[in-house]
Length: 307
Image 1 (cartoon, rainbow, N blue to C red):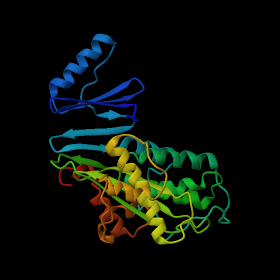
Image 2 (image 1 turned 180 degrees about the horizontal axis):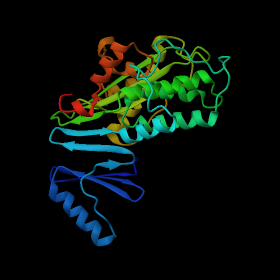
Image 3 (image 1 turned 180 degrees about the vertical axis):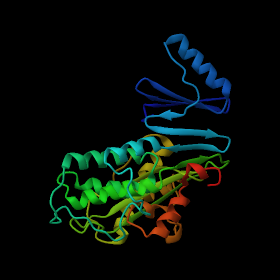
């Protein structure tokens, strides 16, 4: 198994999952006896403290109920807003201005690079529970080397968006479906300077998405079809890794055809209205952005029972 921090044991059709981070363990299972036996065995061999039901981990707040789990980073967001004196800022509806194109050399005065990198780095950490800002934050990270005041204003807009969605997070609901579904999309030649395209994908099991990514493509695509093909390949690699937890992959784009022929994945046409990966490739209008945000399972803590 390639993911060396995750351990899975199947016993009589029951599953025990252990995730390791440095000296912390997260233990989950669908049978309480398995969990208790594992904890007892570990305590016999190691000095351990049991902290009880998971409620806070690596800056993520966890609320568990009969309906499922709600993950957010409200406390971290509030600290970030205080750090950049944005706690009383005016909220906005989207993290990105529609059709805004940022340039590396935009003619604007340069800004404090250290402060800009600190802000964008913190926002990248927030994307662990906020897929709605993934595209914007990855877009802003392209200007780390020499940011201008225009870049800093664009980064602070994300804080203004977070101000109005402070209670938002990911709600993972219980579901009988274990079907893995993914979406991939691209924004052809979205970068005016380099003519590079952006790939985006997301994956869901039983409703809410649990895996997402937005990334500038490493080669220049000469058509929308080529950009989509590259995006599909990136999504296919991630899908196979999710299914098999191994990253032994061929590096050729035509591997997608082989994956489909071998039954590893099925390529299905998706209409623009249903394309969740739109959220990870381009700035969107308010209504479209809010529709997609709801479709991927994001909601505020106060409404988590309804979403």
